Image 1: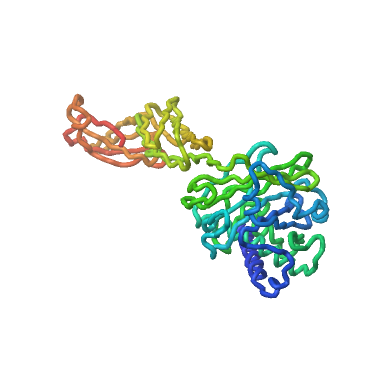
Image 2: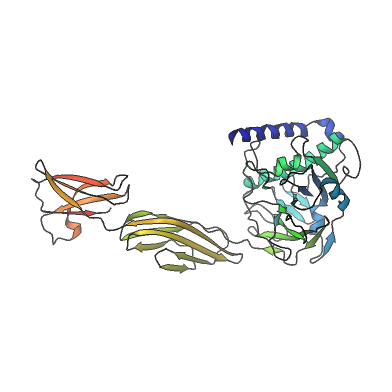
Length: 437
């Protein structure tokens, strides 16, 4: 895997060097504007095709200016150009995306000022009538890497057009047909994942050190492509920064959806419902996660997003429902291994985080064996939680409250769950107890 990563890094550095050649920029045929031009990318990785297509669909402001509910035909490419690039439209991976350079902050348009590292990209929908999962807004630092990859796809298409150096149906102002053998194919180079280039998450592979998106932006047509496939188009401003369309600092803006038809054509429909609240993301931690019964555990909520309800399921048949994100306490009274689940709900939907065997509780500890050796009492036992602290207390009066017993040793159980303690019989003690912690 490391050798593959180094190879991918070398390919990217070569591509970036190629994009910087001034003579190629001057020879450009593909008319790409870095400031908000929407790009559509088409490729096949399984099985691998001979070409990739990058199509300029015009400024994103054109899509934003469409009346709600309007459907338009995408005319920046033709079905014959698709046929020239792909022998079949089955298994085509396709996506739509846009951004603008970081040197412009914000990007001022007649529709408003878009904050630095605003992204527009698609999410594949499960079918032609159902909206996809809404993407999350991230920090501008996190979204900056994706912005760089998007712009690199456009710049790379300009460069490939210059290398091809001919104007025809497959290489013109709105479309570039990129041979996949041409410098490892520009589209895949910048949209492909670091480890698996067939995944379209804009995964950086070393050049900028950035992380990929947590999901693929591409839809993959089925092998039997007989019905339209759908990609939903979202505007993702960095979190805490104001979306100029909605005024929100948290919600994702839903522009509408693209449909690709079995004949290779495409339409775009402006969304009727434009402001979308993404579902929350559940997360939690607990402490301690192992120990003796009865074991009291403090669970701390670490969920993010817009949340109105928290449901804690502790795995022992008990649950708690909260309407605030305050920590909750729960006591496990019996030994066992428990799976804990936190389900959070809000305006955007619900999300559950279940952690299997998260809490491990051992039965109440006991002094299992007592022997005498060399004038000393040797106490021990097994079957305890490794690494858990225990104490041995001593007293001359069995009826005394536990708080009045005298601690004689503190230690932790060994990796196999055993312990051993040696006590001189000369000490003034008649009774011993093992407690934890």
